[in-house]
Length: 139
Length: 144
Image 1 (cartoon, rainbow over the protein chains, first blue to last red):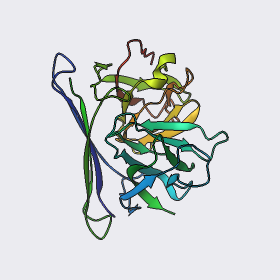
Image 2: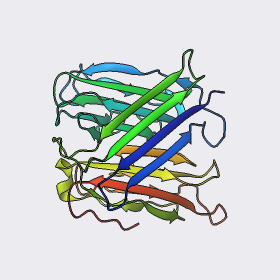
Image 3: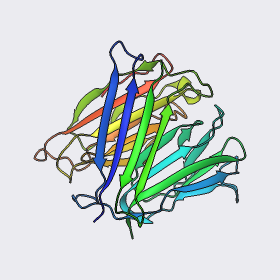
Image 4: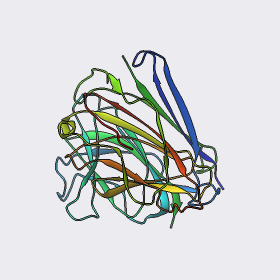
């Protein structure tokens, strides 16, 4: 099985009166086991051209419900460099398409998902580039 | 007053070529290049309940403000997980050692971040959880 590691470093020398230096690494495993995840969509780059949810085209599907066994890990980054050019991620499976996350320019998210919902993205500005990847166990 | 978040995803063998993604985001206020200037600091709680508990309470003014959330399940038993919900929607499940980091969208005052030790019983032991919020407004409250 593959060994995949996700590390985050949160750092600041001046936010607090003492230096912030938090480093955490997680080895990504299949649910309830110590067996490593074995599949990935690979890192994708896409232009989001839709500026509203629910429209027919221009949105980007980040993950399709139940494509992977729980838990799929979603990495997404808004590649835009203009502050305020947000990416909106919504749950396309649940009634009402509830908004889940907003990523401003330069923001990223790393989310161990439940895996049973389809996630799509639309943008505040057409176009906005994103990169994303799902890691887990395909089913 | 810059706070940075750096993510690194690595694997030598999950694909035909190595995966090595490393990106850094500077945590800024919404729609601006001004650095976030407030934080809850790193909090630690022990979950011992299978029902949802509010980890971070949403704020009416938060919808248009930036907030970045870090949560980690510090349990070591790989079967123990916590469910993370926002607005009663499950947005993540953290098994032992897993962490998440995301910009928090407080779309309304019901957008609390809640966590539950979903498969907790009196015999499983508590689930230690650590979390931190980096934000720009003044009156976030935690009541975990």
